[in-house]
Length: 66
Image 1 (spheres, rainbow, N blue to C red):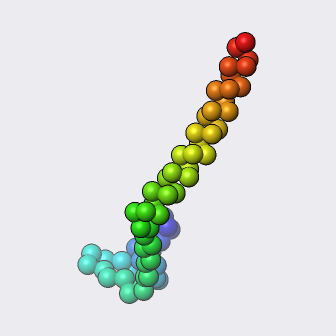
Image 2 (cartoon, helix red, strand yellow):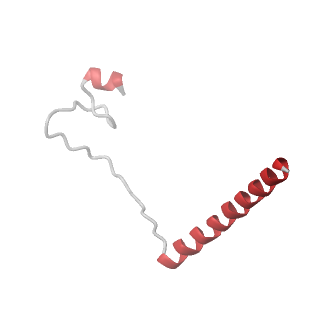
Image 3 (cartoon, rainbow, N blue to C red):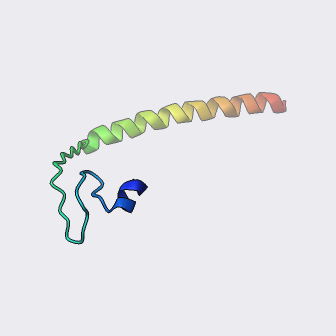
């Protein structure tokens, strides 16, 4: 990138970059969403896994203290 900048070239093409330059590179973006219900279910499942791990750690620490 620095070499292209030093040479005054567009980041994507071997064309000179100048103020007002519009790159003709075609870009496609995809945004994928989740329904609120799916997001909530994913959160609940993740929380349950972490809660189980935390409970296990607490039980081990209690045993070590006794």
